[in-house]
Length: 493
Image 1 (cartoon, rainbow, N blue to C red):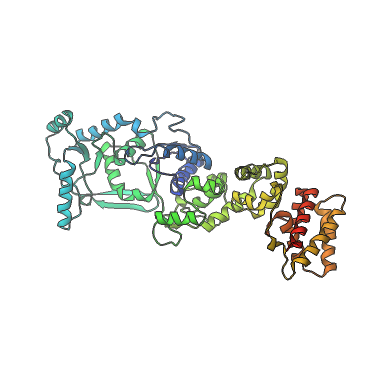
Image 2 (image 1 turned 135 degrees about the horizontal axis):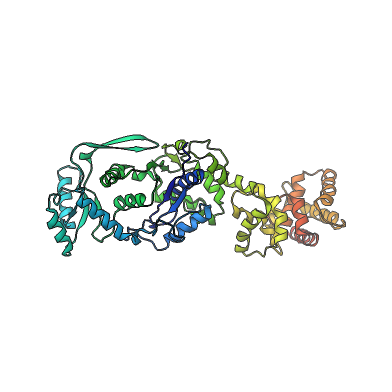
């Protein structure tokens, strides 16, 4: 791998929420920049003002920071090649668009939307591919400039050659040759004075010294046009990488809005803000998306530093990747178990306090080793740790009744356990477990019967962290009080 420092960019359009496709398009250039000691740039491509969402830029920036993908230049931190919002670079695009006109590679077009619509309808009726019919290509250059300066509405289109072909190279797919006759005279500068992506991104990549363009596969059909624009200016082209497509979980077709809605019903999401709220960690999310398009073992557990050390553009693959939420759970749970107790405690605490619990930090640190192996997402802490911070629990009375025992027999078991625990000088897992296990042996009952009654009585639920360690953390007086209430409840059934 060539380790020469690169300049790469993540250039999202702020038209909606940040999703895993955005995140992967940011991750790979970030890894390449950090691997080579290069520069990672955030550029906001906000020229589509009709679809512009004022909250989207903030969500994009917050998403990058949550993932730990810190950029070296960007709209909020500046840099040598700013500004980093395309709406603030309007003059540059005007200059470059007219430069192409002067060079004979572009032309002003004064066709009205009504005329273009009529031409399109006629072409479709004739079973032709709809495209611009070249009406303004032959306009005298001086006349076109005068009409533009007089205030007449116009766009600037690229003057696509009618003959020959162009070859562009994608690092994942090799050389792609396209006949020029199959390409249209695409709009570079819109009538509102803002550029299209086809002009703005090429100009900015050149002016910002971008060496590698890593972007979504939806831009692959536009690559011939982009190469034409770059060569028309006489510039060197960056290396292009078009990433693999994300498929719906079934593996059949691209993910749709309906699939996204169904995922949320199932407790999953493709949007980073939702994933954070659902208890996913940046480490788990990054590991998951990194391997959807990177030709390393799909079970590799990688930290961000390990990804940087191993990353190689040549290892990326164009093969479509099905979204597998089970894999996300696997990686998330694995990274949770790799965390230091204090780190994990700090991450689960907001979920507990958000649910209304008054969290004691010292107690939480004691709880973490008991629950860490059980957590798939951070919000699982509510199920496995919430009862520690309750003044009281209210178990389902029927769940206090052990399998194959009556309520009266279960009450007798609880009374005996209460007697044993009350007689202990201190309640720790070391002091409580031996006498209770001796009780199991003497009673002839199954351990699950006795410990099941105690678990529900003490925690309020049938599934919990290890019982004896949990009782020690809850505290002697609270444990005894909860068992007494369970005895009374069972006696009343």
